[in-house]
Length: 222
Image (cartoon, rainbow, N blue to C red; front, side, top):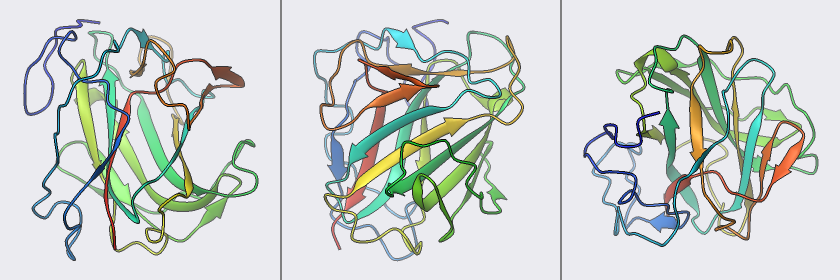
């Protein structure tokens, strides 16, 4: 992977890319959804950690999970840092966001809501469905053939979704999987060099990691 590849909306080398796991707060989520006049606070603030490790190829049967504690009532975006291994991939990647239930860390085959395609190659949908992870807040389908190497992927969350409210201090979990990913045709996501998010845990397959997934959460209070 080219660590100096393009990043959506701006270009930076990996030495200057933020590894930020703080939950950003917005002044207002906007009644029409996350895409309306999102104003980020200190969007690319830096801290002293490197993004040195990929989680591995997101192939069929691999599940990547990162839990965190929300400090916002409503979540409007999830950011992930993806990579393509500098190749053309074909895998479909699903990303789901749940409010954690009692069986959050069990294997789950939760029902995915029907999605509508977005222009950036990802699909988004939300519902009140539940799985062993908990209550589904929103889910997305990413076409990895449209991913750029070392790019920040911003996933809009339905701010009017049934489960997207009163999330402050609630445990949530991001689940990344692929229903059809094949070796050497699947992308990856970056994780941090160290355990920079003590209130959450990263699990790849059945193995807990010392590192954390590189992710950012954008949210606001009611």
